[in-house]
Image (tube, rainbow, N blue to C red; front, side, top):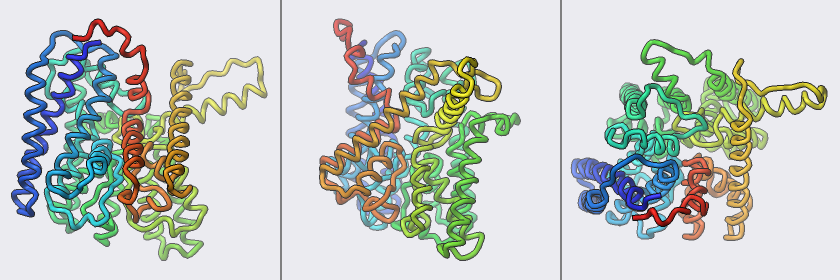
Length: 485
């Protein structure tokens, strides 16, 4: 384990964060809202600090697995801290903890916010919020690997530690090629969504911001009422489509773009799609029969919007789902735990893990009927290794423990039970809005600093899928201290 290598890569990432701030400063200058100097200063500070330390810690050789995990966790932490500077130096936030919370929510694509009046924010700050989610969606680390192939084989350790999902999938032999291809698809989908939004009457600024946060499954908006502010069925349907696409494994999108669509043969995709469609139809029917919606199209649109927004962990709002029937709310609550597909920008447990658990449970039930039978858990015709099932089971247990412990700690901090549960699950799952006082029409700005700090940590844990962060606290990770230099 080399501390020099860890610091070097962490600071390299901050160079890209600083350059992103400088690009945002250009947006601020164009609109002239008075936030230009604050964002410019933030970018220069981040660029200089990151660049100087990077240049003085150059190393040779490949990154080890332990270094890769440490780099990822510390890089996302440092990115959130530097990413908080635009909020502080533009004086849109005066609390460092609240600023780090907002930045962490952006880069982890959670979408929880401390701002109560989003439309009062200057354009540069709004753009920075959206850009943090867009960068965090595919991953700043993947971006660096795509551009800087000098990381070589060691870059695989960063890729596996950062890319969401249990099975990051290579599309080409070299990891740099894989990262570039993923970003190619990501940028292409973003540009397509911007164009469709412009056709629907959005301004270019709103179209860019909402496309950034949709493809990242982040959910930050430029409007207080989120997508409901546009009052456009067309815009909501476009958003539903791209939230769904963002929740699908990007490897499938790449193969489709190269003329080899394999969606239908992918078992996780079929399961994920059935969850979205089945949940949407169920909620639409209940809302129609209960009088919560008037008309088949609005009922189906609202239901699919929220099922997709929550399942993919995007977190956009089109109406207040807390006004729907309790049964519908509980159904939506269940979707908080599913998440997008492996290899998507979505958070949550991931559809593949849910599918594996369901298949394993079915096998356990059959074993009670046939004790001597040798039953294998399969995805299609492929048997799943026991170590994979053990990893999935361990992850889900840890995930639920974090949700439970978070709710308990928040309750001790004074939150009511419903809000504590909602905030804990929404941040660990990177969903954003929860229930109670952190629902779709509320914000997190009223929470205490300790609560915001706790939830910032939970967002990081959820984004990096628990194990990556916990390894940082394991003594074995830092065992060979004599190799520090």
